[in-house]
Length: 118
Picture 1: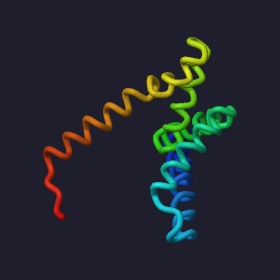
Picture 2: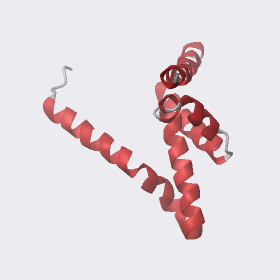
Picture 3: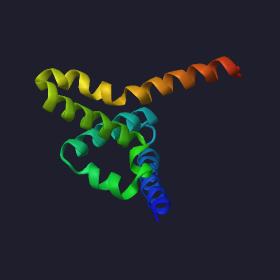
Picture 4: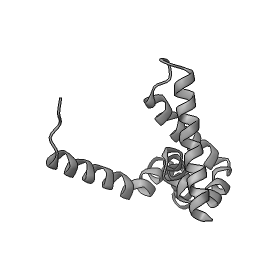
């Protein structure tokens, strides 16, 4: 059941982004969707509304860009509780550091192994 819910939640998030891009051509680009999803995920997480979606959808809600915004917001909130106002500047990056590092490392490896055709 959890696989089905992850598929439905993740697929719905992707479907919404694709519909927005298709209906607003050429004004909304994938970059707008990227920033929008991260911002909306962080906002919903800060308001306490993203956690129930993550509980229902599992990886379907935490892997997409909105899940990255959720991770940033939760890391910031936790760091503010521990360190005060200074935590607002470092908490989100600390929480997402492993994912950011993995993206950089795997991107570098792919760039070394494969040659672009263009």
